[in-house]
Amino acid sequence: MKVIVLDTAAQIGEEVGKIFVDQVNAKPDSVLGLATGMSPVPTYDYMAKEYAAGNVSFKNVTTFNLDEYCDLPKSDKNSFYSFMVDNLFSRTDVDLNKVNFIDGNAEEKAECERYEKAIENAGGIDLQLLGIGTNGHIGFNEPADEFTQHTYKVKLTDSTIASNQKFFGDVPMPRYAMTMGIGSIMKAKKIVLIATGESKAKAAYAMIKGEVSPSCPASVLQNHEDAVIFLDKEAAKLL
Ligand code: GLP
Image 1 (cartoon, rainbow, N blue to C red):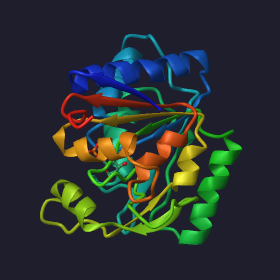
Image 2: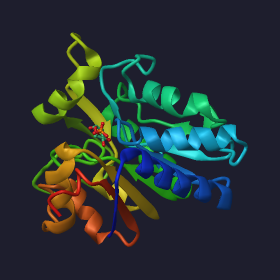
Image 3: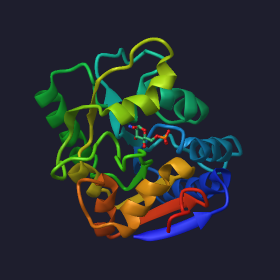
């Protein structure tokens, strides 16, 4: 696990954005694992800027997102699909026919098997982007007694709901989501995780210095052969 500390989220966005752009320029049909939340936004901004400047094309990439809410239409402005359209897909030449999302409203077993199979048929994920929850979750893999393996349906914790309710205003947000499991995520050839802000300092410390434990799901990245963690100074303050 390589840890890189930079001054600002914008600098991290540029460095991580470069990793993605270089990956796609080296392998135009790359399979990219994408994340939502605020942490990846500067990276998507950089990717969109490079596309607009004619320095990269995403038209042949295949994408897989980590997670999606249940009981929420895909077209809802708060779905993770809408987030990705707004922040990346509408700003680049990503082919929406090559975009893959878990259908949070489908029957769990069949849908989770379909998604895992789709990733396998695509040849696996070349480069996976992650954020981290304040409780150390990745995707929607919440602290648990064991590391999850495959894509599954999860009941969101109170802390995760508290962190995300702000995006839903007065409408109660979904209580369930479907997420790639830890095992699914760890199969990616390369993983880049972004943690910024003081609220992530405890999770970042546990991820990097703590024991590898499902009580901090992100700690599993200590066992990945090519995981790079980008922190700003606030998120790195306990290290
Ligand atoms: C949600 C998402 C995660 C994301 C996390 C942190 O729980 N399911 O994929 O990493 O929030 O989001 P942020 O980057 O906004 O702090």
